[in-house]
Image (tube, rainbow, N blue to C red; front, side, top):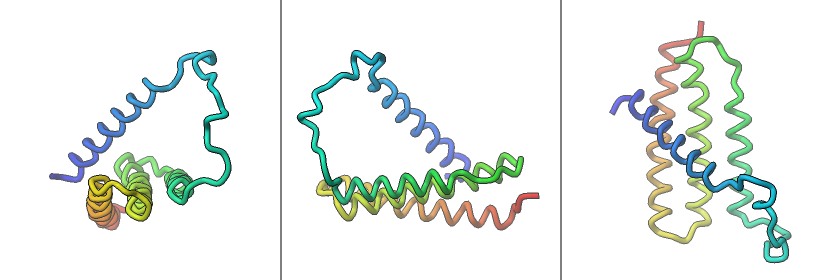
Length: 129
């Protein structure tokens, strides 16, 4: 599968996840009211801390200086996005309990590392002008 096809599939999957997320967001402030007494307060789990750290780094690293070259800018933004997926997968590998999800996360690490290498190799051949 070519890099372009992989990227299109990744973007389609991200769009579907966003649509599912937006469907679950309350439409009004009335729907947002809830009983806080049942929510766990205090220290966050190691997994939550790990996910938050990975997301913060990913978003920071994705804030690239644009070159005006759509291809270069896309690949430069996708590298930290893929690294974020790797970092989050490593959190679930370290903290998750479900063998199926751990196996999925291991696959994410392997696939995303290969795609990052492919994108870096492409960038080396196509420097921004």
